[in-house]
Image 1 (cartoon, rainbow, N blue to C red):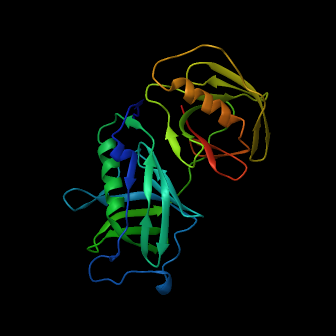
Image 2: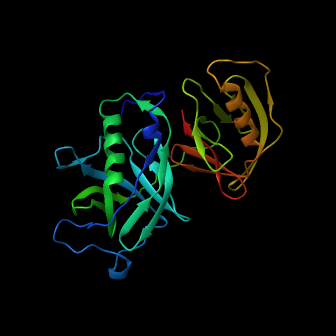
Length: 278
């Protein structure tokens, strides 16, 4: 897919979408909904790729070729994935075949390929309307309160992970330090490139930085970070973002790569920095 992304500000309503799941039937009208009590497996620890969704005229349609829409239900009630252009993240609780999701945040990119942003908006809207879930083998279906299926997923087939070294990783989100995650400021670029000789270099948004790093399995540690000494006043908040980014590097203890996404975490496994391959 021809894909080009630009950073922009998205209305706050899209940055924090409250998705509340209410009771209802998951299966098409007339069918009995599933649940742990009648054979419906647990959502925890599962990951899914969107196959089809309900279009505005009520019919089911496949996703745009080349796009990737996912949902991962992790331990501890964490939910996240790709909405096709942006990544979203939040919390969920499941009880029987019903589902409840708290506030969901997302990154702030715009994809210029035709239909991608409309598909993303539709997906998040349908996710918010879901009331029940049903797992049948390798298929997950979400339905609204009337019992109409609105989203259908297949078991995730993880893409081959890109190598840590030699890939230019562009920062998408950064931990705020208070349990939240913030997107990179619009119009700024923060990146990291790891070399085979244990060096990492990149742009922190204004200044160039450099440091040594060590790897052992999934363990990743950075040495003292050096940087140039320029000041950038535009956009507002850039220098604070740069300082936060460089500070987070010092707290990194592990990493994981999922396809083209690199996530750096602290000792407790909490996400500190999330990158996407350039």
